[in-house]
Image 1 (cartoon, rainbow, N blue to C red):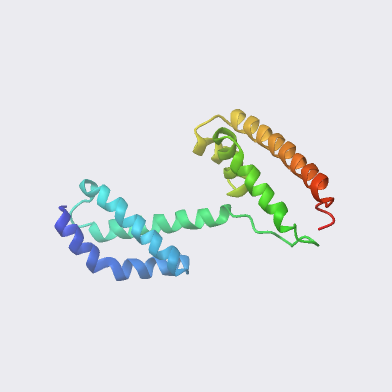
Image 2: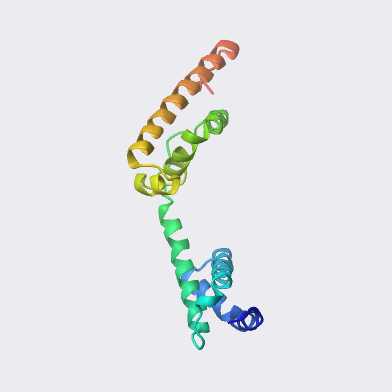
Amino acid sequence: MNKVSFEQLYMEQLPGLYRLAQGILRHAADAQDAVQQAVLQAWQHLDNIRPGSEKAYLARIVINECHNVQRKRRRTVPVPEFPDRAAPKNELADLRDAVDRLPEKLRLPFLLVYMEGYSAKEAASAAGITLFALKSRLKRAKDVLQIELREEEEHEKLFTGRTAENI
C-alpha cells in the first residue's frame, strides 16, 4: 500500500474507527488517543498491510490500542477510602520535591512502582533491569526519601516550631 492510498483510506475510515474506539473505551479523549496511535502504527508498517485487508487491519490496531489504554487504566490503583485527615499541602510538596531530587537510577523504579502502579516485574522490564536490581533500588529510594523527609521535618521544627501533626 502506498502513502496516498493509505491517506485516502484513513480519511474514509476515521469516523468509524473513532466510533469503534469510543464504544470500547467510553471516553472521548482516550478514543482519540487510541485512534491516533493506531494510525501512526499503521503508517509505520505500511508494508505489512495486505491488499484487501486494509480496513480490518486498521480496526484490529485500534482494538489493540484500546486494550492497551484499558490495561493502563487497570494499573491505576483506586483508593478504597480516604484517610481521616488529609496530609498537609507542604508535606505533599516536600515528598514531591524529595522524589524529584532522587537520582534517576532510583527515581525511575520508584515512580513506576509507587506512582504509576506497575508491578515489580513490569517495572523491572520497563526500566531494563533485573527484578533483584529493581527491588534493591526501591529499598534504597525509600531509605533516601525517609532520611530526607526526616531532615526536612527536623528543619521545620527547628525554624518554625511546627510539626506536620500541628499543621
